[in-house]
Length: 78
Image (cartoon, rainbow, N blue to C red; front, top):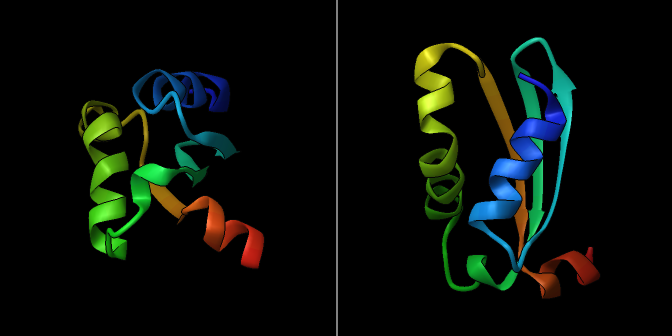
């Protein structure tokens, strides 16, 4: 699976987020910034992404996903 394909899946599901995906060979880093993560702990944020990508993880198209998920305020503070 290409990074652009994963990016498009995430953008379609989370249109108000800034999304970027890096990686190859089934191992990816998903970076997302959006208000959707406001008030969510790290696990709930990750679950948001896993729900979108789960069928590709189960099929083996995606083997590993690392995530950097932030609100706009957290991103600008970093």
